[in-house]
Image: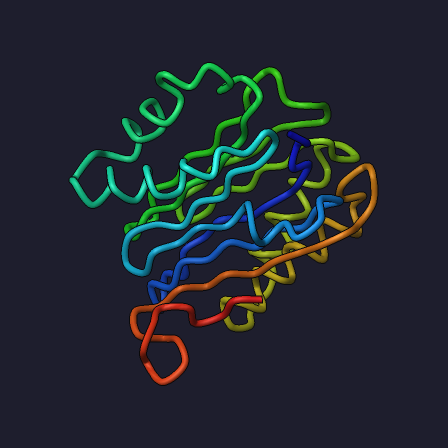
Amino acid sequence: MRPVSTFSLVARDPDTGDLGVATASKFLAVGAVVPYAIADVAAVATQAYANTGYGPRAVDMLLAGVPIALVDQALRAGDEHAAQRQYGVVDADGGSITYTGDGCHPWAGGVAKPGLAAQGNLLAGPQVIDALVAGFEGHDGPFPERLLAGLLAADRAGGDARGRQSAALLVVREEGGYGGLNDRYVDL
């Protein structure tokens, strides 16, 4: 299994309640692996040696009333490869967590703030995460555009140290999809 060397931003729009994940990587088709979101529950990004079960597990725990801090502990519990994993989770209330295992490829790290979690591995340096957050927070447009502004700023700050190959944007809103028949408001 190849690592999903990536930078991602998981966030909640305080005005609409929309939840989203924006991600970019040298990994082909990063959108098939990293983002996971359920409207009005949570958005999750899983990367490095990604565990795609983390998204559904986090959502299930949050739906069952598990506090986000305990979700963080539970995701790693029993995962023998947790040290090689990285993830960010933001819940419908804006609670956030980020985790970077000490086995992730350098540079790796992240930051969690109310309403957002930014993380990355195999990056040009910590300035990529700083730019990811600043680009998102410094843009006044609609939520999906703010997520993209964060990605662009992170890329300009050096992004994935190996280069570019793919990016993805997922924003969920209850009945926000085509014809109101699903929650995929934006899925690129």
